[in-house]
Structure formats: structure tokens, C-alpha cells
Length: 212
Image (cartoon, rainbow, N blue to C red; front, side):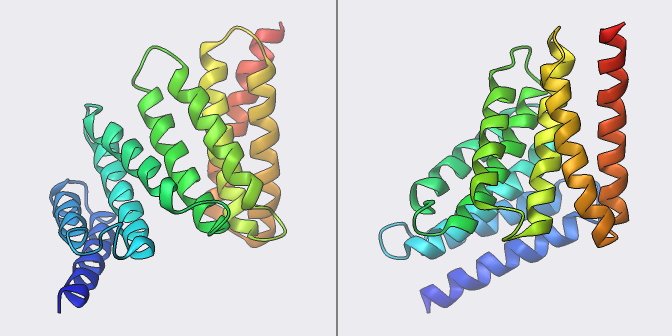
């Protein structure tokens, strides 16, 4: 059955991405991209819009992971285009939390791309995407997801602050990190506590240097 085959291809992609997280190469991620694209031949926007959006988001995630491991920007740009296409179907009105997840994924891809470009446009877009995600992924609704997005927001703001001469972006970054930190400390999420503390401390150091 074509529909079942597509579901299996999607699941294969998920498994390959999970394996890739334990490896340093790109082979498994390339295979995941191939599997997701195969699934999309049957999971079309016209006939299976919700399943199409799930697989599109998964494809974007695999492309993002590939882009992070490669030195160029092509995969990151593909990921951004894929997430934006997903948002055309995975709308805020219909699926608010899924919409927020894809907005967060889009923000990460934009932040990664912005780190490889001299202009700050992509970083500004990343900040906007994270703010959008936080409108639906609220603390009282999904606390850990909210904290992770706050962490991503802090990281994008710190990247902007490093390139600008003022202090407002760094101050916003510190506030985002500290908001996330409170949640992660309470949840005992040691890995994310360390990430937030490192980001906050780097932002504070640069902020103090600028204030001298």
C-alpha cells in the first residue's frame, strides 16, 4: 500500500536521524533526507496535508542537521525553505503547538545561517521566529519547550549583540537565558542548565566590557 510505504519511509528517516545523533558523519542524514523525500512522493500536500506537514518538518530537521555539519550554506537554505513551506499548512490557527515547534526549528536554521553571513538580517529573522514560537509555546502550556525556545532566543540575541555596539541585545539575551535557567534548574535538566549558564555568562562578560 502506497500510504503505508510512505509511513515506513518517514519512520525510516526518523530512525536514521536518531542514529546520526550518535555519529559525526553525514551519511545517515543524507539517507534520512532521501527517505523523507521518498515519503513525500505519496504524502502529498493535496491528498494528505497533515502527514505532508509532519514529513516536511522532519525533512527540514534533517537538512538543518546536515547544514550544521557542513561548511556551506546550501543545506541551511534548503532547511529554511522547507520549514517555511511547512508553516503554510501547519498554521497557528489549526495546530498552534506544532506551528510553534516549526517556528522554533525555522529560528534555529536562520540563526545557524546568520552565523555564516556578514549581515545580521538572518539573525533578526531568527529572533522574530523565536518570539513567534513563544506566543503559542507558553510556559504554562509546555514548560520545557518554552525554556528551550527561550534558550535559542538568548543565543540568537547574543549573536546579534556581539555584532552591534549597543547593549540592549545583550541585556535581552541575559533575560532570556535566566528565564530558561529557572525552569531547567527546577526540572533538574543539567545539560541545559550548563548551556544557559554558559550563554548567560558570555553575554554578561561582553555587556560588562561595553559598560566600562
